[in-house]
Amino acid sequence: MPGLRPLTHVDHKRFVEVEGWEKKGPAKGKAKKGPAKGKAKKGDHFRYSLRLSSGEILHTRVSHGSGATNDPSLVAAIFREQLQVTEGDFSLCVEKGILPPRPDPESPLPPQDALDGNLVRNLIRKVGWGQAQVAVLSKYEAVAAWQGYRANGVQ
Image (cartoon, rainbow, N blue to C red; front, side, top):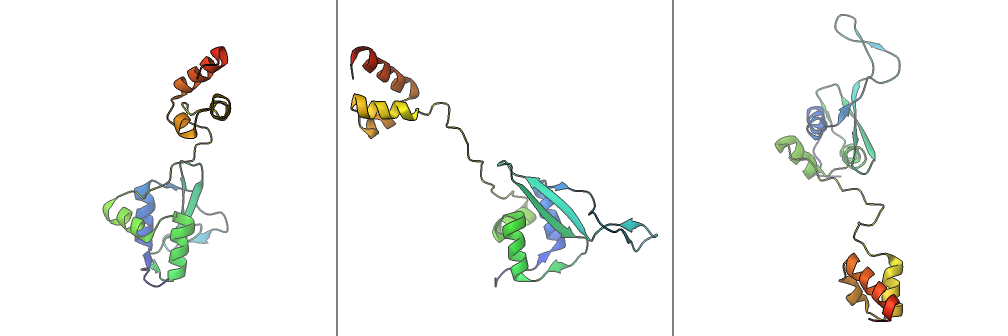
């Protein structure tokens, strides 16, 4: 992955904050003594999640430190698997506050005005219309045409 810049922890944290990722509680595990006043802290990463409109939930971890992830293959994996963005979209979000494009969920149901498959088949096979002719019909027109055919045998 030549060409990928190091991913600074500051930029990584800014990205999740700009896009509105939800900060999760501390990591589960053995508590460690923090450097100041003997306070216990858990883990060495902030944890975030983001629910996409498709229902998928993304997860990422951002180091508490001020350094950077320098390994290009690890940076590429973070972009691809955790953040699901390109380097360009990441940079636009961090530098200009432009949210990355996220795909809309695929609709499991056809639109309200979509023609029923049986209706389309009947108009083509029984009424004798061509696919192009049926394709331009509204749902109302298609139903009316089928009802007219059934009632009168009229095309």
